[in-house]
Each structure stands twice: as C-alpha cells, then as structure tokens.
Image (cartoon, rainbow, N blue to C red; front, side, top):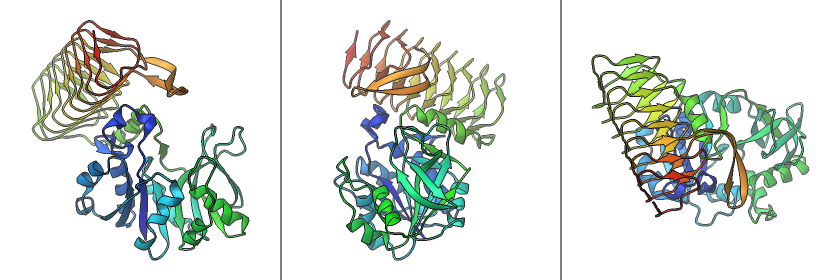
Length: 401
C-alpha cells in the first residue's frame, strides 16, 4: 500500500516559525514533524510515499530527498494553488493503483496509530477517529456500529466526541467522487465533503477508533506538547563528552562532538544535538530539545523548551515553555516570562495557549537583560537592544530600543 501525505500548507497559525519553513518541518524531539509520520509508515511496511508539497517545498525536498535514508521511496507532487484536500488527493491519482493511505502532514502519529487503521480497513473509505472530551474546533464523526453516518466540519455544539483524525484509507473510486465534489463555502475542495457525498450515496464508509498517539499541531505552542510526548521515548545515549562534576538524571541523548561542562544539572527526558557546548552550572530540565551547533554559556536554566539549530544563549539566562528558532544570538541575562491560559491574537482572532513563554523566529540578535512578556513573539531578523522589555509582538526586521 502507498501513502499520500498532504504537506503543502503554510501553517499560518505557527508564525513566526513558518516564515522560513513549512509547519511539517518544525522540529519535534530534534526531528521534523514530517519525519515522525514517515517513520510510522515505514514501521508498518508502507515504503512508498507521495508527498504533496507547496509552501517552502525546497526545504522538504532537500531534507528527505528520494527517501532512501528514511527507508522509503518518496515521490513529490507540487500543489501550486491551495485548493483543498480533495484537490491535493486528486493530484496523486496517477501515482496510485490500488487502496492507499492519506494523512495530513501536521498530525503527529506513531506506528500503532497507523497499525490501528490498517487492521480496521473496511469499505470504500476507512477513516480514523479519536475520542476527545473537547471537540469544539474539530471535525467530528457520527457513526452507528462502526459505519459512518455523517461527518461534520467544526460544529458549534457538541454532537459527537469522536474527532476526525484526517487519516484515511481510500479505494480508487474516491477519484470519481472527487470529480463530483462541489466547491465548499471556504472556497476549497474538501475531502470531507467528498466522503459525505459517498455516505449519502450509501457507500460503505467505516470508522476505526484509535487510542494510540494522535496530536493535531495547530499552533506553534502545540509543538511543545508534541515534543514532550516524543521525548518520553528518549533513550540515555551520550555520544559526546560529560565533564567531571556534571549530574545527569533520567534519559538524556546527546550527539557527537557535544560537551556538557562541569557543574551542569540535567534531568531527562532531554535531547541535545551534535556539536553543542553546554556551559558550566547550566540546568536543563525535562521535555527540552536542543538542536545542533548550539552554544549555551554558564548558569543558564532551560525547561520544557525547543531550541533549534545554531542558537547561542548568554550566561544567566532563563528560558521556559518557549521555542527559539534557528540562528539566534541571545546575550546574557535573557529571560522569558511564562503565562497560563493566555489568549493570543493572530490576524484579529484570539487563540488559546494553556502555558507559554515566548516563540522566537530565526536570525535575531537579542541584547543583555532582555525580558519577553508571556505570549509575546519575535519574528525574524530583529534586533532587540539591551535592557528592553518586549510587551508586544515584534514584526520581521524590527529594531527594538
């Protein structure tokens, strides 16, 4: 069986991190989100993958290539215009010749999730559903004895506790139905509309309930939760050097040519990439992922955070519940304030963040003793002068004095 992964979207709600990369390339436990999905497929014997790409497609193609290093064969399809999920599936018609899987590239799954769906395959469409107490904002599924009777896109009241996970097995007849799918009110051709059309015609659409891993990464801060989940599988593997006097507890993974200096206190699960220098007396607490070529000076505290590649953090800094993009230079005594139950505005719409420090994009220079208030974000190529307190979101290319 082949798999189609829909990975063409921009990920606007993950700004500023997606100003330079698509959402599927954001790191979870030091691997792109998309790599975790491909691994889950490969572990179930699905070795032929079609990636439907669009925004920032070059970064995806450069990283994954033909798929050989990941144990799969990858073909690419370019979705030039974002015309919806049904349109994306239709583009892959010539690449499949039998039943096939379709997955959204921004949903985190593991091998068991895919195995659950494969084991329950039945009918013209088999869709995966997960039970959630809170379903507002999600598409939901109504079924009778495993047969889907209706799919509803983001109902305003609770009509079902089964969320449509956006993972399907289709037979080839889906392509005929896509041709008959009308344009939605959102101006797209939605695969859920295609499936609902088949339900109305009496075709067998079955539902498989899975209790395995499924996480929907909508906002940038969702990646902190995903990171914590995947780090639970972190194994204690130290390839670099740990100096005398450093304390390591729990599972910590560290790449080649990295060093943990004396006096450090690290509590796993934590992953540290290659060519990193963790300065003396630094504290790194659980659910933290540090990318490659990261330099952290002395007496820094980091917890429940993601630091991408090529980040430099000055001494005495405090980073908590935050995501720091690539190639940032942070001077000493930087600090992130952490807030709970935040309402963060994006393009006039409020979005809920349960717990968040900050999100910082790429290529910024941050001076001494800078404080970023909870939930405020810094875009790309910004300069923040020493002693500043960031009270509002900072747009790209800004200078803060």
